[in-house]
Image 1 (cartoon, rainbow, N blue to C red):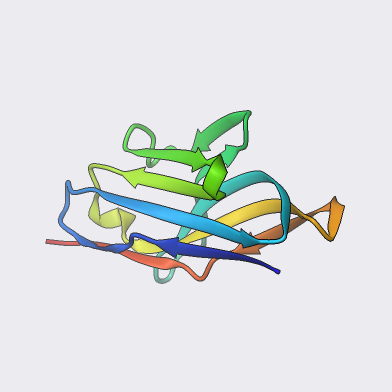
Image 2 (image 1 turned 30 degrees about the vertical axis):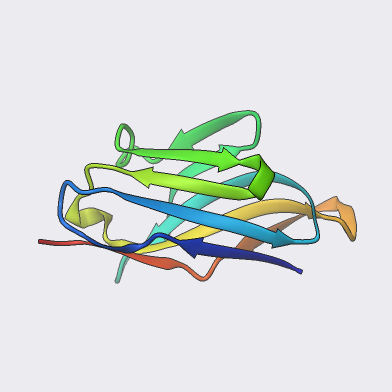
Length: 122
C-alpha cells in the first residue's frame, strides 16, 4: 500500500558529491519522519540522517557538515545531499519512513526502500 523508491546512487571519486532521493507513494495519511540508513559489507546498518517532519533533523557524527537531509512535502520526497564523499561512505543506502496510512490513520507504520548503492572510489 505504501512504497518507497530510492534513486541517485552511483560511483563517484573521493571528494565528489551525490544527491539521493526517496519518493513515498500510496495511500498515505501523513508522514511523521523519514530517514536514510546505510549498510556496508560486513557491517551493521546505521542511521545516517533523519528528519522529523516540521520539527528537526539529525545526523550521524560521521556525516555532520558533509550531508544534508531535506524534505519536499508536496511530493512526499526526502533528499540526501552528500558532499565531500569519502571511501568509508561506500554502502547501500536505504530510505525509511514512518507514516500513517489512510486506511488506518491511528497507527504508525514503518516502510523501507530497496536501497541504492553508493560507491566512493578512485
